[in-house]
Length: 202
Ligand code: HEC
Ligand code: HEC
Picture 1 (cartoon, rainbow, N blue to C red):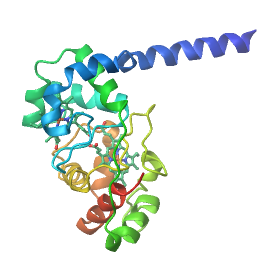
Picture 2: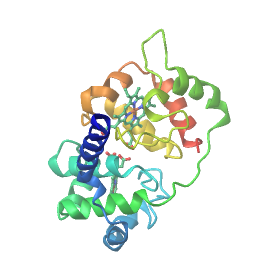
Picture 3: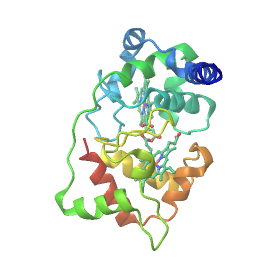
Picture 4: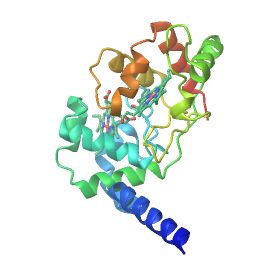
């Protein structure tokens, strides 16, 4: 009896905690996504590496980024202009839509594959870089519940830029400084190698 009650209470709690973004409607999001397509493409698989792929990214992470651009917690002039007219419901719907798409495949530069894989799986013991897979998953698919983004298939150029901005502390919206602490200890060569490696993960 007690056990059953606990299970029911726990799932009710989990249910309400995820409501914040689970309320997104993918079909409504698609209808609102026309203005995103110019940069991110209609299905969220941007062609230019200057724009991140959104397809298949976890919805909780996407919604958090949109609200962070809106509040100024994540600073980007282009994206803050894009989210300005959006309501909370719009952002939930857009996150649900892009999340429901499939991330397209990319490639790893063979010359960087070994070095990139070493950082992704093991970090760097000497300098204290944490292994990426501890949070982003063995295959780079991220963690929906924890809002850790998927990296698999993401454009290397974009991944590299984000690692640089965490390192230079111009991106500061990572909870608990999780990414700033990792990036602070990374060399340029490690950043380049791991970015190329994750682009080829599927
Ligand atoms: C004019 C080009 C442009 C348009 C249009 C645009 N974006 Fe972006 N978007 C960007 C750029 C550039 C970035 C990367 C910002 C950075 O480096 O921090 C970005 C980043 C994002 C991110 C963060 C992705 C991540 O992996 O962290 C999300 C989410 C996003 N855009 C959603 C949208 C949505 C939804 C729309 C439509 C309402 C939209 N964007 C329209 C250029 C654009
Ligand atoms: C302790 C957990 C943790 C570890 C270890 C970690 N990350 Fe992250 N990472 C995060 C979180 C959390 C975010 C999302 C921050 C936010 O909410 O904006 C993130 C975001 C990122 C982003 C931005 C993604 C995007 O779409 O904008 C990149 C790139 C990234 N991590 C790469 C790495 C790499 C490469 C490593 C290994 C060298 C690594 N991370 C290790 C937790 C971690």
